[in-house]
Length: 185
Image (tube, rainbow, N blue to C red; front, side, top):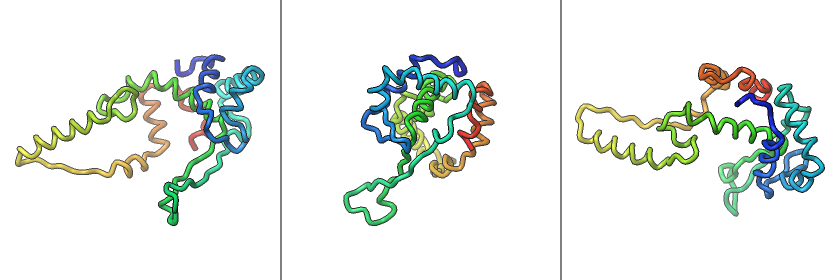
């Protein structure tokens, strides 16, 4: 089902699930624009999305992204007081949403129960309770070792090549993994 042909309904759902209030990308088109013109542009948008999924390439400029800084507080005076955001083209977001929706059906089968942050309806507080129980048992044992790891740094250092190799190892179809090689590199 990851590589099944795209349906008109999938594209429509991706468009109508997007936030109307979200900012447009560099091309100037927003979800509100696509929704309000769906009766006219729907078939052409479907053809463009379908072209990506059948050919593995985007038209030039689709992946263009504008990056801007948004202040976190009213009197931002330091770079740490800003949050960077990227304004992607909505067309790109639609393709990403379709891929994400398809992945949602597969992820519960390949992600361990303890990885609650990645699966809908799993409660991340369960891990806090589990950690508290482990630490309670840890205190009662004299021959134990405990380490606090900086997860952010570990996550930030995962390579694209590793992720692609892992997807292939997990049995994801090559056609799906390499939908658009330029999307990853």
